[in-house]
Amino acid sequence: MQAQAVVAVEAGRIELKTVWTPDPRPDDVLVRVQHSWISPGTERSMIMGERIDGETAWSPTDPLPFPHVPGYQKVGVVEWVGGDVSGVQPGQQVFVTVSKVDDMFYPTGGHISPAVTHHSQVWPVPEHVAPVALSGLVLTQVGYNCAIRPTIVEGDAVVVVGDGLIGHWASQALAHRGARVMMVGRHDSRLAYFAARENDRAVNSSQEDSASAARDWAPEGIQAVLDTVGSVSALELFFPLMRRDGHWVSAGFHGTRGTIDIQRLRPRELSLHTPSGWTSARMDATHHLISCGVLQTERLISHRFPVARAAEAFDLALHRHEPFLGVILDWDVDTPGKDVQ
Image (cartoon, rainbow, N blue to C red; front, side, top):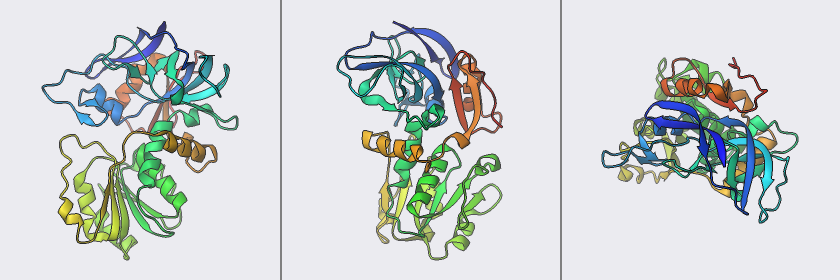
């Protein structure tokens, strides 16, 4: 069957194209997409040919991964349900992850409609939740995954490095666990989205020494540092401030630059966590926290584009020519795209 898809046709170039998908199988669900959420980190580096998959850097011996359909998260309305599928009905609004596609470098992708998706990658949208709020569920789950790794007690100080989407969702989940949070970023426009409480702190590291700020903010020491940007040096910057039995969490993509001296962690018995991907259990937990308002997603949307302007949306993510945070593609014909200020 045919579908419309955002296709990375070569390094750095996006087109909206008609593609072929496999016919739905008895264990599949067919979804007409309403909104898809761009993942500016993973999708950008894959579209630029920097990765061969989500966790593997491209090398000269690898084929370039084109053409492919980028992405892994969207919401829409169920149009058909296979005979082996239960718990999903036509007309229901759902979130789906990757969907099937033919004749591409990868057999699955995200930004495609109608979307043929295995039932294990489908989550219902509760009636009281706006569908767009769940359209970034996988990426929200990455932030949640980072936040659940450290051992935290009420009032512990945690530094989150990065003012992107994962940093914000990790900070929200840490706050829910009772941590005090310092977000360290480089963009005032993004730091402005930080839902800081009375004892939290936001630091622009291009204007202020973040290690000194953390020392003043948490003289008792830092319980955990979460790196969401893929920087070993960012982790090491806060090393002198770490408490015994503290935690490093590394979620950013390091490519070939991810070397860490494990021996340095031993004297204070620091733990290193490397969260990656998604699991059903973590998706369920994240789905619940969004649905009950603990994890806030809509407030992090800075731009929306109709899917016909997908190339423009991805140009923003690829070249970063203006401040942005969450970028949504609207697939409904009657939904006008807009920039959200």
